[in-house]
Image (cartoon, rainbow, N blue to C red):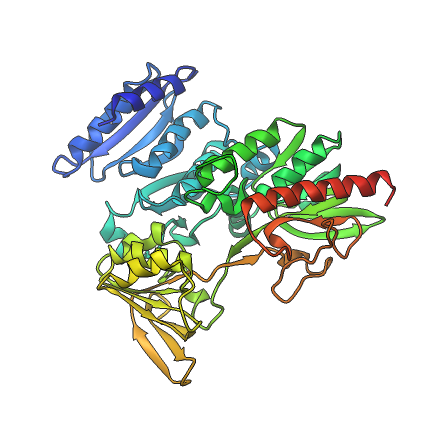
Amino acid sequence: MLDNEIKQQLQSLFANLKSGYLLDATVPETHESRDEFIDFLNDVAATSGNIECRINDGTYLAFSLLKDGKFTGIRFRGIPNGHEFTSLILAILNSDGQGKNIPDEALINRVKALKGKINLTTYVSLTCTNCPDIVQSLNLMALFNDNITHEMVDGALYQDEANALNIQAVPSVFADGQLLHVGRSNFGELLEKLHTQYGSEIQASQTEIKSYDVIVVGSGPAGTSAAIYSARKGLKVAVIAERVGGQVNDTVGIENLISVPYITGSQLAAQLKTHAQAYSVDLLEHRRVEKITDEDNKKIVWVATGERYTASSIIIATGANWRKLNVPGESEHIGRGVAFCPHCDGPFYKGKRVAVVGGGNSGIEAAIDLSGICSKVTVLEFADQLRADTVLQDNAKSRDNIEIIVSAQTTEVIGDGEKVTGIRVKDRKTDTESVIELDGIFVQIGLMANSGVFKDIVTTNRAGEIEIDNHGRTSKQGIYAAGDVTNIPYKQIIISMGEGAKVALSAFEDRIRGV
C-alpha cells in the first residue's frame, strides 16, 4: 500500500527507535477494507525492526499502539492515511521521545497535573488539514499522562456513529462522551479546556514569574521577525504564541513573497520556527495570552495556563482571525452547520444545499470548491457587486449549481440547536427579508484583528486594530505592535515581516535612550 519512496523515508525516520512497538489491531473478517488495513499496517511495521504488527479478529477496524508491551494510550479507529498518516508516524516517534512537536517541560507538567481518568475521542476526515493538529496534540497528552487515552476515529468509515452524534464538522473532540471541542485548535487551547472540565493539581500561586528584556506575543511573520531582530541585539527574548506561523498555517500557497516564487503556508511556518530557534529565543508555544498589566514600569503577561512573564518591552504581533457574522443563531450552530473551512467540512455536505457568505476571493473560491460536492451553493454578498477577481467570478458564474445574490445582508442563522436548517437574508435595496432553506453555511467575510485582550492597555480603532505610530509604538509606553493586528493599511506577509523588524529596532532604540 505504501510506495517505495515513503517506505524509505519511514526507514530513515525510525532508524533510531530505542523501544519496541506493536501495532495491535482488530478487524472484522468481512470488513470491506480488511485487506487494505492489514497491508497498510504490515507496510509500516516492515520499515523498522522495532515495529511489529498483530492482527486479531474483532468488531471494529482499529489498532492500538503499544510500547514495550504496554498500551501508550493511543488508538486509531480507521486507516490513518491521508493527512492523518503523519499522526501515526509522530505517535511512534513521540512515544520514543522524538519529534519537534514535543512541548516544553512546563506544558508537560500541566498535562501530568490533570485530574482523574480522561477518555478522549476525535472524529476526523482524512482530507481535513486541521484534524492532524488536534490528533497529534491529544496523542501527546495521552503519552504524558497515564490516565488519559485518545482515539482517532475516521468519521467517513464510521458514518453511522458520526451521524448518531450529529457531527457536522471536523475535528470533533469528545471527552468521556461529552462534546469538548469542534474545529481548529492547538495543544494549549485543548489543555485549557481539559483543565476547566477536569481540574488540575497545579495552582496559579505555584507558577514562577520569568523575566525577559523583550516579550513578543505572537509568532507569525511579524512576531518572528521582531523576535529575531531583538535577539540579534543581544537581548533576552521570549515569544509567546498559540501556534508558530499564525494565520500563515492556513494559507495553501504563497506566490508573492519576493525572492521565493512559491511556498506553502505550512512550509513557511516551519521555516519561521527554524529561523527563530537559530537564536537564543525562548519559544513558548501553545499559550494564549489573557491580559497584559503594567506594574512599576514592568509589563506582566498573563497566560491562560496560569504562567506569568515580565519584561520592560512588549511587542504585540497576534495577527488576525476569521471574522464571524455575529447574528442570532450563529454561535449556537458553529460546528453544527456553521463552518469556516470548506476544505475540512465540505465533505459533510455532499449532495446538500449550502450558502457561502462573502463574495471576495475566499468566498468565491469556497463556492467553486463546494459546487463539486454540494447539490447547490448560494453566494450571499453584502455589497452591490462581487469583490472577487474577475477570473474567479467567471468560473463561479459558469457553474449551474452556484447562485449569486448581491445586496444581501445575513440577519439570522436558523436551526434547531442541533443542525442548521436555513438562513434569513434581507435585501438591502428593498428591506424585504426571506429565508433560504439549506443544510450548511460557510462564513467567508475576511479577518479581524486579534486585539481583544489588549484593549484595556492600548488604544484600538473602530475596526479593532491597534493604533501605532510610524515606529510601531502604541499608546502605552513600552508596548509596541506590528503586523495584521495593527492599523497598517495593507495586510501582507512581506509587509508584516518588515513591520516586525521595524518595531524591534524601535523598541531597542527606546531602550538605549532610557525611554
